[in-house]
Amino acid sequence: MGKKTVTIIVMIVLVVLGAAGGVLAQNVVPSERHIFVQARQFGYDPAVIKVNKGDKVTIELISEDVTHGLYLDGYDVNLITRPAGDPGVATFIADKTGKFNFRCSQTCGAFHPFMIGKLVVEPNYLFPGSIGATIGLGAAALFFFARKEGEMSGE
Image: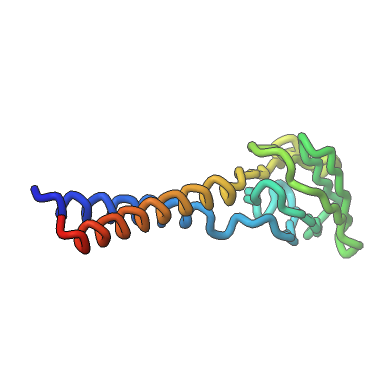
């Protein structure tokens, strides 16, 4: 393998690594999330909510049948709603990563203890992804210009 071939392969690998870092960084900028949750005997829709760390999350709870609640472990959020009544609404910053259960906080029937859902707060990879993209693309540019300089000097 010649020097030129090795340089091209290294450049391609660095560009791919830089692009991969950029892909990780997509769509993870903290944002405002408004999530409608419908409660009914004996479940939530959606049962799993996914957000990113740093997102400002507003949950609006609506009941389809009887009085329901939603208590979110780890965030101390407690909503209550009645059928054909005002929705329960709470806003918080998702500042802790992990999986947090939410459960009905109002006795709503025989299977009330099984009425649970999950909030998944994923880490925000924007900063590390951006660093990876910058390093990868910078290294590829250095190899490119070093190669061009070598060609000009006759190496």
